[in-house]
Image (cartoon, rainbow, N blue to C red; front, side, top):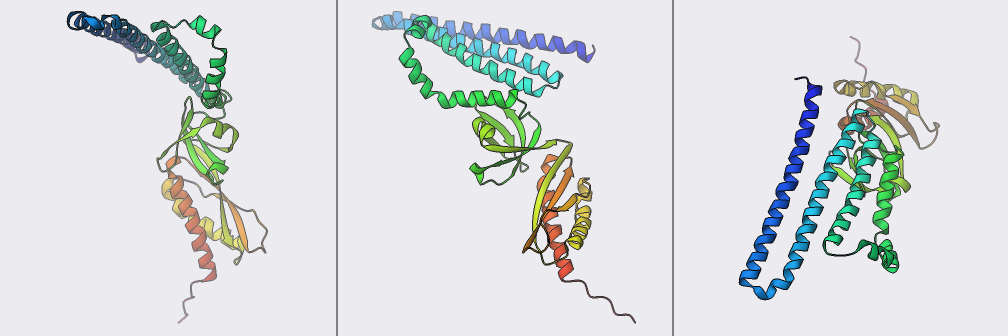
Length: 309
């Protein structure tokens, strides 16, 4: 059977398996509910008036679990379709919106299972709504920020960005975006460490500079050196040393630009690195820094010429 034809079959199998899980779980909950009621009526008849709470809890659990499984199925469908179109932003925002809807549905199911009238709660909950709104203000801000981050295509999973924020001392950090969640954005550093950054922090207080995607990355790196050697010679010698170090990574010799004018106590060089693999960045940056130091020392302390016989 061709691969394209087998995919729908595998998908339907997953959906049927999910439906079977819902049915079996509901049956198990109802069985436990019936056993608890039987045990109470048989051995603890004085507790019989309280068995209604067991039934309410059972209905709430079944409803929440069933809605969660349905949410996962629908989210996987939307996510798979968006990925087939390579629309990563729509994939993330679809899952984000569905997750928020699931939370509301789960809360509504739990409340109605315990006999709470949603219409009455909404009609008479003006004061409670204000209190609740203030309590969840931060969460709502994070959720809306996550939707804006995904919907505006500011960040798409797989993007590599240079993030600069005063919250971490304005030190540039290279990050690969993994996922934009409801409250946090998941990112990975070149060392393999995972970061969870609040969405409002990324949206309002962080400067993001696109570096590209895996396979085609360009990073502008700045190097400051004492202005005690010729900038032209330093650039030339550093480029040769960097080129030798970059060979094993398959990266070309970077472009080196002098940003500050000669004559100051130090010169700043802009080194534009082009590379393919995100996790090679730390090694490449180390080669650049080391090469500049070696090039400067080579100019200040030239090798003695061999004597002619």
